[in-house]
Image (cartoon, rainbow, N blue to C red; front, top):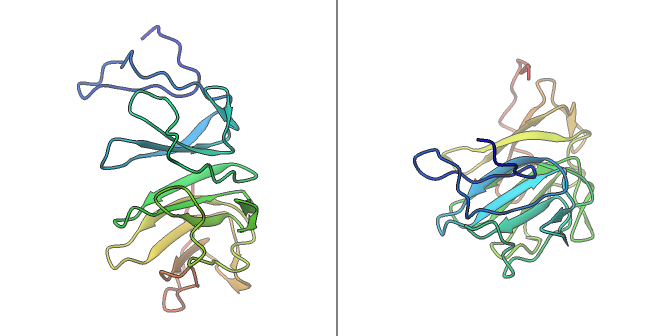
Length: 180
């Protein structure tokens, strides 16, 4: 309380402000996930963290400093959804069209070091951004957002299930829309 935090603050286990955590983002964070090693993955509207150009995603150490061992994937627009897979790979969703200079329409997967995972290719992807994602217990990825098609296939409910390689899971056809 009362301590300014430029778009991102840290809390201790008891819910009090962690004064040791000092990450300064130039715009809003929209998603975060803590890795088992306590490093923090953050996605959002920002383009710099602690004065360093990052694009809209970064990995922070537990004190808020940038993790130098993480390749910055430099999505060209906001990252609004993050899902950490059990193998340490990271699914990122948002409104971007490129990650690491490679065309990836709103969805990409990163290796644990931040490099683009080229074995995951969502093809043409959704026709609009991704607002959220979950990892289903069977290992498939479910994403949702404002899109109406994924790889040219209609998705009336703005929900799609992907296979492990990024291809559209054909057996999943939801019929009810979600309101955000």
